[in-house]
Image 1 (cartoon, helix red, strand yellow):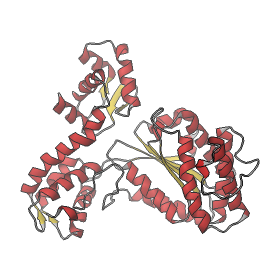
Image 2 (image 1 turned 180 degrees about the horizontal axis):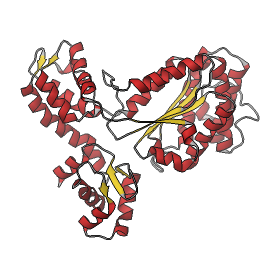
Image 3 (image 1 turned 180 degrees about the vertical axis):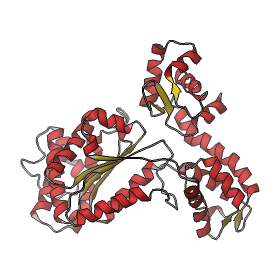
Image 4 (image 1 turned 90 degrees about the vertical axis):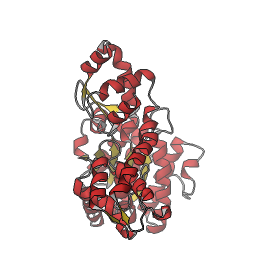
Length: 393
């Protein structure tokens, strides 16, 4: 088959050709857009949580694009683990700068729009006095707004002014934060506090987030009222029906049909995880003799090649971040397959006191490789990780 026409796109955050199984979340944001256009209050933002590979980043980006296409002020960021990159507040400022430059050309130059731009200028100068975070915003800082040099207070005033300007235009302001569980708690508290304060004065400023299954608990640790600000959605693997559509529809657009048995094999091997579907689909296309069908014999080759590609990239990149002691911990978990595992049973398998494994457990959680679904239990954040670990050992 012609590799140049391969429609499958495995990759971090890459939108698949057929985005299926996420209609409820997309419909939710379209409803929020409609309410904003009618200048009606929007109850809550969305928080998406789930394992890696289920398509949270793709979905979050899709929701942000819908908002942008409807004139919203939108900031898109990926939170970084502490010490791994810039802080969330700086990332937000840099992302908002680009969105504000776009909407300032679209919005009428009203006093509220000028006020929002001035507040952003003040906020950005507080983070970086050199002005690099507000390049291209040709307006003076607004004195007395977002210039307290206190992140929580400044974010509240910025959120109110952005929401005020957007509301006047029949839109809203929203921040879309991926890998939200990695955000520093002080910045996260300030951000959530700003959204809460804006809601209390009927300003349409919202936060949408995506992250690992631990994210709802992480937000609960940040503040106690997140259930009033967020609607929580767990993003699961696709159903067999949706998996089949995600696999076969892109090929159909290229004039290529999947044999029934071949499609069933890939759907089963991928276990409904969108990333895996793309990886196996890519491998099947490249292995197919063609010219207009993908057969079961093609798929038998593709399963081996697709698994090797997942091992070398999706799994290996995470495994290599763990230390030898952490490899032992992950190996003890693999006995339970997909888990979850009991922390005390892991200690027994390793012949170690439970307390001595605390550092390895904490480090693996911090690295985003495992999470605790409940007290005394632990599970992989990556689907299929147990099989990979067993292949290594």
